[in-house]
Image 1: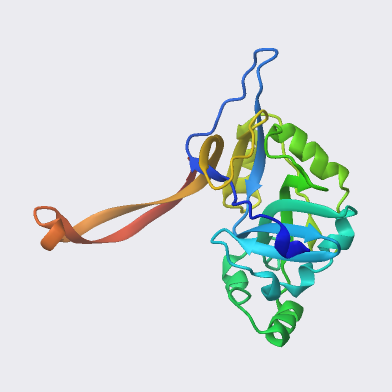
Image 2: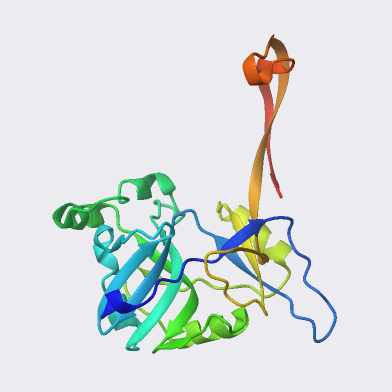
Length: 242
């Protein structure tokens, strides 16, 4: 049964600078995935049953009834998959504000009704176990290959592409599409449950605003000796990546 599968906590990325893909022959490079603004979820599939667990070890299966077709979509008896649950806006971009109405719902009838008005999509990007065989020690490139070979096809399910070219090109594409940023993963990296690893690097787009400060107040308490508050007017808004 699904409940008998041991928990595998999600591997986490480290915030950092955009990696530069090595050019030397025989040196492993990077794959780049889009960064999705949603809820991280590990899916446990066994004998036609599904259990979705959050990053905080909460069972969130009831909240997303439209994902119940995952067991039939993967075509294997047992699997553990990693991914992100997102709600898309009218332009096809993840909208965390929309997703918030779906979170923490424990009433079955309410969850079904919400699923009709604000459906979610489960974006799968890693395979951790299949038919009782752990894939954690396998390199990322091999796990992605196994995931692709599952040929997952179903409503509300998607395996987004991973780009093995220059990470800068993927970052530019994510900005153009209005996404949050990218996650770069070493092709040779193993999956380390529950740990933040430098083998996965997340790079977000930074939005900066230029202002003119026309007044300020001295800080108090912990901010004694520093600026407590400032007042200004915006001149321009610029967007940069970093």
